[in-house]
Image 1: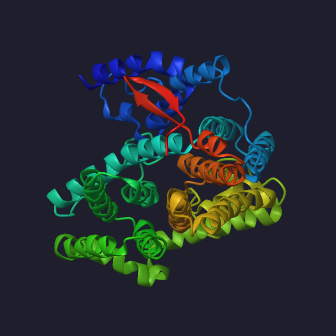
Image 2: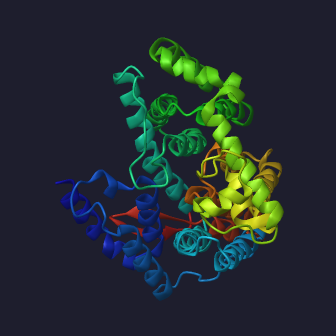
Length: 441
């Protein structure tokens, strides 16, 4: 039944995707983040829905009157160079078959990112995309929170199988990243019921993060809570909400959860931490001996490379750090490009915050830039112990940071009120179709 319902829904969206490439981007993002087909049990489970919608969206974009040019920005340049560089390291990869497959996946991710740069050209379109991300990942946050409460925290929460967030650590990281976007929508929502609903979703998402039993996710959550308090308006509601979470966690989570989180203080004595350190040593030694190209995607699958560059007695395993993974796979140029993307994205948001801090009419941009920075903090913190160096949401957030900066710059340089309205014009769903209206705020 789920398979049929999903199929009917997606095919029902096909006409809108073909008429409006922006709708295709939304459906594409929904499929990529929520992975609804992984909740099915029949033919829909392995059907390439994302590829089908991606091809339709790109075809619709080519046939439409939408601007086909990717706006110029440091983010665009770095993304292109990073894609080309990973292609170069793939050509010299130690595990060529696995590397080629992984590079194709990464290239597809960046096609989504470049489409975001082209199609998100207004505040309203940005808001729609944020809603899609929040609904897609928030589904697993709310579901995980309810599951944790109903089971008394005795079972781990995992993401959909066969997805970027199937692992508990990766799911915790993604949920930490979506919390600031929920907060942005809550700050901007004009309706009290929507604000209350988002508050409830944030509560269950935080509980869901605890339910993953991810120590890296727990540390990232602590960082996100502090950052939200420092960078958000209306802090009283946050204090009440997180205090409620603390009470629930204290009375709900079992002793095995407490014991697991307590190992953070004694990480050097935990076997899983020691194996992570071994993987970091492997990646570092590999980069020292192959500084230009590294070992290519999935080099950690090579037993021979582990024998040569891994510490004595280490067992081959994935490199559990987004930074060390990129270092070992893409070499020194690769890690420099990766860090530069994060730094440039942060700088875009910092610039927007400076430009809009004292302008009430652009409070939306100030709030969004602040929450994007918290998203980046969540990724960078949780990424210390995850393998998600190429997580699609991270790169789409980078693109959205660049788009936000461009929108704010365009509004600032608009010479007439009519031009300012054109910059902030938006698409909205009216009578089942997407139309643009210059009065959107």
